[in-house]
Image (tube, rainbow, N blue to C red; front, side, top):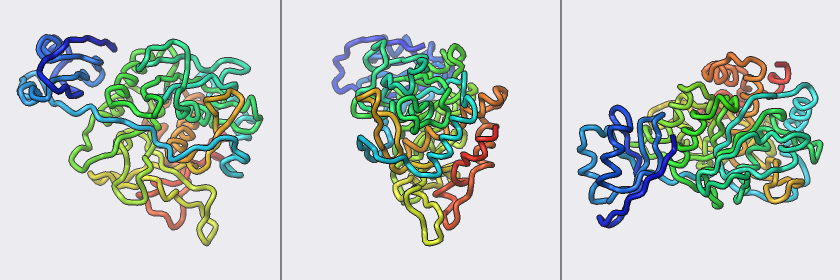
Length: 389
């Protein structure tokens, strides 16, 4: 349940935090409302609430025997590097041809819902014609009912998952018959808070069966500090996986240094996707990992990313015009390509579990020569294998 309460405080500076209960949120909710300030969201799937409390009361509240921990409600950002309009060519030749084959071969991803937590979604023709596949839209920021995207990132991401090429007959997502469920949790600058993302995950868990949501795409992240790998986004992503959802997240654009994977990509339960640069090759003609793509391992020693997918000069939907396309670069573009393939796997076999989907994707990935495991994970997403589902 997502609820909002308000109570004004005279205690000075208010700090946004996420408070975890040792048991259920009911035990701490009334106490917080009565004594400390504003509850923004209730998040029972992780036994937490997001709240603003006076800075000088944090220590007192942390001593409450019903409270497990208090964490800062950090800023979350989208993960593209740059974008440009009016592309003249597709992301890469082989990838484009593979996607065309995906579209022509069968109804890929049909009936499967993919939730995109992002900046919203614009009703681009490639998503709403010949039939509308934006089956749900939830706006956590302004509570608007009709789909919109005031940044453009979410629409671009959605197109890489489920764009059907209606306008171009060329630019097609990896699951062109899948349904999109858009949850707007990032603003017109591509920023939000951890609690906004957690509230989106809570909404998905509450409504997932209604829309047959099987995959959650998170092309966003938070920079990780060495002493903070158990952060709120990791807790939320792990809980979503335990509820039966495949969570695909961008690795981040903080490379090429080691230990630069964003949260929640540091979670061992999610599928973390780095970026391959399909526009450049080494001296032997091998594909390279994009220099900006975040590298592992995590600070706790987990090998990340799990795999890589194209992430440089990727063409997808333009939110400003329902007939136009744009090019963006970043691991934000890599993750939805994997999300679409995951949707195809579920369409082929609805009985698969998130662990099985992850295992299949990693098993079939193509290892790159001359690239470190902590840069590429198990290798490049294998499109050709999934044409034969």
